[in-house]
Image 1 (cartoon, helix red, strand yellow):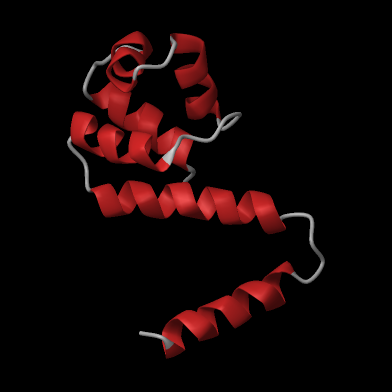
Image 2: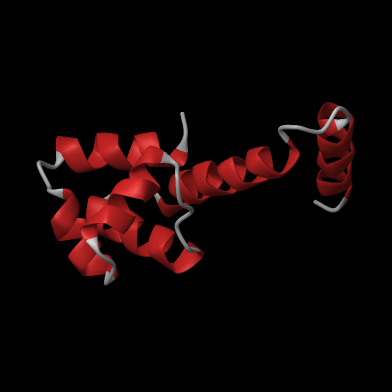
Amino acid sequence: MQFGERIRELRESKELLQRQLAASLEIDTPMFSKIERGERRAKREQVLKLAELLGTDVNDLLTLWLADQVYDLVKDEETAKNALQLILTKLTDNS
């Protein structure tokens, strides 16, 4: 599941309108709509605020948000899987 899809799912389950969350984030509704559709990236601070507003675990949202960013960066690279495996190894070694 992508970040935008999760935000939409949570928003709808709480019966909130896009304009309500957009106002809380101090952005306009079209910008929020683009975040939900995956056409625009939320800022980290916005992710933290959304977790609070939607009553969900901040780490879950941050994980989806970061995964989307990594995917966008490597999706067209032939060696993406190898690079991600190398990163995983480095992260595991540093834990």
